Image (cartoon, rainbow, N blue to C red; front, side, top):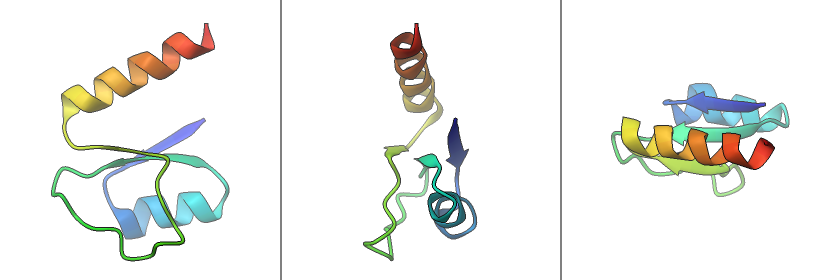
Length: 61
């Protein structure tokens, strides 16, 4: 399971603390304020998210 979220504080931080893999949909080019909590992947637009999800799905097959 991978958590996809657009808010670093509201989505990525809690998901990482719960032990989940994360994708940060960072369409505002925000910065990471806590170097101890890093998303597993970062995308900046819908095309990047689509490509990443397709790549991940292909790895499962």
